[in-house]
Length: 53
Image (cartoon, rainbow, N blue to C red; front, side, top):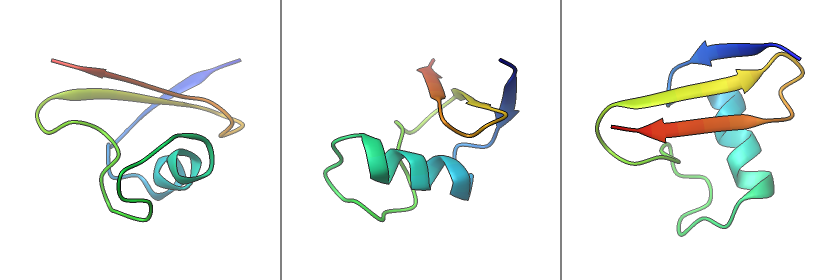
């Protein structure tokens, strides 16, 4: 499995978050906290990792 660094507004990550995580506003263009975020997505687009600083 390989992880790719992506932007926190990446549409693939937004779609994954909408499908698999409880969100206050599904379909919104943000799925992580404001500020500096490290967002990783697997090559198969089945897993997402987000950290916040």
